[in-house]
Length: 438
Image 1 (cartoon, helix red, strand yellow):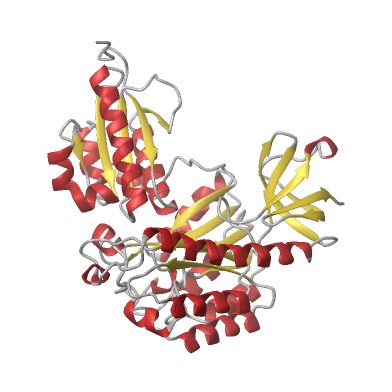
Image 2 (tube, rainbow, N blue to C red):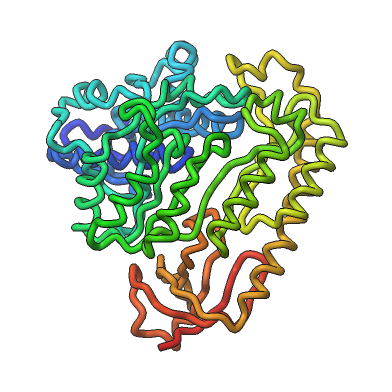
């Protein structure tokens, strides 16, 4: 059996799940680096002796991926290619007792808010002066920016409150400090994330303060784009749109997961909103910010979803023409309110319904993209891939939205992380093809 006991500690952090998990991994890596650890994110080299797996426990597929990853590194530990395997994150928070019984070869399990304990186990000090400091896993020019933790919403299908706890806002002055630190290191775009952005401030300021924090963040020198993710529709603070209109560096982009449109489904999901109010808020947002890109997320096959409910959603998607849309198949999660309901839509039917929604959205996206041909857009260049530079407009978020492909052979002066103006000369369902213009 080979060992690495004489080797200086090198840590490989593996992140599963959402962008909120990614931020947690970046904070962990920043603390480890400050403690003189050699640390990498999802290293492909076989030269680390400690592995920390930041797990996801949101839906069945994500849970299985987390378990498979844990088992893979436990096997590597048994083979002697790593010495220590630690597990943290949502799956560990939610199922710690079960995991300790089922996979005892993991050296220790930690919850979502146990960073100091994890560091102590590694014989590292939790450095309070580094709160907010991170080792970015994204390209330096953009960063996910978590403004709160946890959630107080009662959505029937969601296990997030079980894993992340109650809503807790980060104070505005701390957010400004963090944004300035990122900007000083070359970050140009902040992607604001939270389980619910619109709840920001209610716990510490006793009122919704998303508009205020957005206004103050837009003053941070060097931040050229600010993007809003995960806004709850019920109680959405409309003054946020006023800031969006006033501030040129706040992208005309809003990610608002709506989940469904049928009143039956919305009521059972405990969304606190009706079909008509949902339609009204979408219309009001578009009226207040003409040209805004609206992204939403839906659920297919929720318990009790009838063919009529599904047809109602299809018709609404077709009529509303969201700029961006994603859909999940329902996952029956224990200890959620919906777990008391019968999971009566088969997995095959859930997938079929989701595919039907995406087929409509694909055509909407194609038509929207075709309308962009001949127009000029400001693009942030994310990377070079084969013969293309790949970037995004202000209407697109990394990994989930459309990309702009710019032929590299005619654009040698472009650099990753820079803004360029481009003219769209061709378009497909989810990609735009462009050339640089002066």
